[in-house]
Image 1: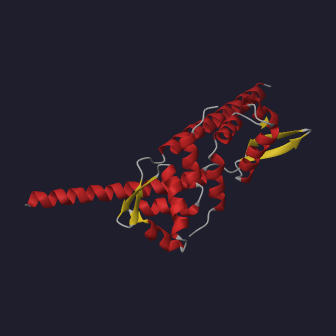
Image 2 (image 1 turned 60 degrees about the horizontal axis):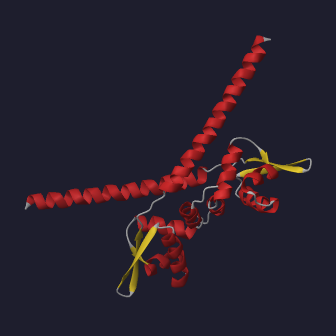
Image 3 (image 1 turned 180 degrees about the vertical axis):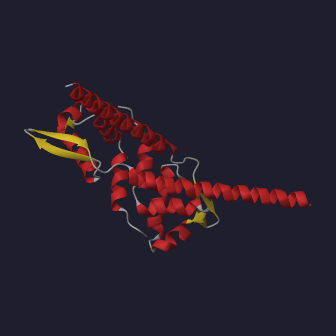
Length: 113
Length: 113
């Protein structure tokens, strides 16, 4: 079995609505931890934890600017999980195609009778 | 903040290489817990736990057949996370477009000088 620690971290980082919201927020431009926490009424510590998970997945970068910590989208995007999903989707489509061919062959056999 | 428990469960279910492998395996056809566990050399209990996570995410269904538990792909696919990712990607593309327009305008300003 091949291990994909990075893709695991990406999927896990996205498994939370606040973290997905943070990505969407940062998609509109950089923000500090305080600015990110504000709309949720959660503590700075709580938001820092979410940002740390996104940072570990390399989806977000942070930089200390004065007393604040500025967050921005990281260099790594969702390419790895998009790639896995494309492969999986293609495999399922292949399965449906084979099922269709089987139905056609069954129909052909019945028509021969 | 809108809560998406189902999409959270889908992302979390995919955050493990064994569970992604199980989905790919079931994409080729139904299998029992024993058949799923075999390639990994993990216990039946371990595989049951993975299958339960996939079942909670409605990605897999299971059915008791005699003494075995047969697993198959569930009714729910990856549509919810594909949909979220499309929206996110579109938002990022929009951001890049706006950045491009900004560069064009800056260039225009400089050209005017």
